[in-house]
Image: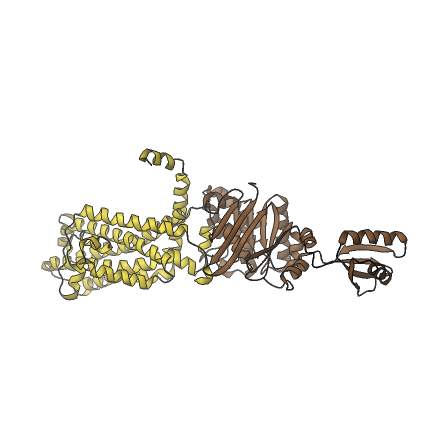
Length: 313
Length: 285
């Protein structure tokens, strides 16, 4: 289990205020996204696993290391926090280089790694300028550069897409995907659910300090039994298909697509539903062009489990 | 556990890495502390007496026979101004910035997220603060000393190099170094314990002031009481100022130095414990 980030029954109280309550997690390598509204405990979880705050109860280990083992832990972990503040008077280059020098490495190696990290976040031209003069997006990038500069095995990113323009956002997402493919642990908190969908191997849903669900998005969706799954079927006679489907008990809702060439159907039993659909297609009454889940994504799960529409968290 | 067992347990620890990290951290801190506009008031605090002595020397030179009086004046400046005010408030400014200042500026987490033991971080910051304070106040006292006797020409030179002058300068510098370390350790700890360490520092100032009239056991919990025993020239004073210069139980210089170093070690050990459990919650700053 030394390749996992483990939370065992972890609680954190800030005085009388609940941070997180009895969280148990076992996070494998890959990209994991923490999703939840403001105050749900996303940042607390990240701060707990990096030792910035200590748990009131429970035990945490990151690839077998305790957050108290600072020398070992931060050799393999990089944390890009959402605190948009920097030590005074530094250039972007100095900021990354100072961080690397504290690892105890030779200066030549630290310089090479600094150049590499700054290149990776595409901030080369601005590296020699004072951070105080950076835009929000550039500050976000230089924090990311510092977090990845020492080639960590675990990368923790708190709202890493905030303040980035669409181009920079796409570049950052590509970088996270690349790091995830390399077998790194990439733990991201984000409220941009469309992008969460695209990049996450698994999601952790939190609200009010409680863990609501965790796992692969599709698995989590299937666990939400009280919300029948919605499927979009593209076909030539959607109204005929809807009528046939309603004849069976599994179908609880039908809605024609705006272009009239498809129908959204909700079903309480997705396996039976697909089996029936195959039967209808075989009968030849309806020519089916495409079938796709319509609410099998992070946004829908967020709505169903947390109750709002996945706005900024 | 026996001493030999303890030594065996300590040996495999990465001392070389910690030493390297501490030196690098100290260098980073010095770059940020010593040469910052925010430190201007501390420069003023250190060099105000120097400026006054310089003006005296240029526009109101004392006759040769006043050298003994000026020696007493210099001792008074060190004991009453530097120890009680200059070094005290200068160290409050320098050392409370090291941890609390970084929390207020919300940049402390960068250090806590680096692969540096928190104890190493704290001691490196303490070293950087101490070097800054000793550099400032040590050079100020040395400049005061040089200017004080420069006005007497050859007689002044003779007093320094052939008389007791050099010994006095060494004692003053030792006092400044110990004062910076002592007050530095205290203010570093206070800055971790309180969001605003200034009221607590005022209590320390009050404690230091009334310390000579306290029982001898309580006198040991004071920076100024140890320093008083190291003064090379006894300062006589009247009225309320007598409280600042009063001679307490006689203690040898070595005992005073060792006692103060022990006090500093105790305060720093507790600070190390505090930083181990320090949490980053900027929203409450």
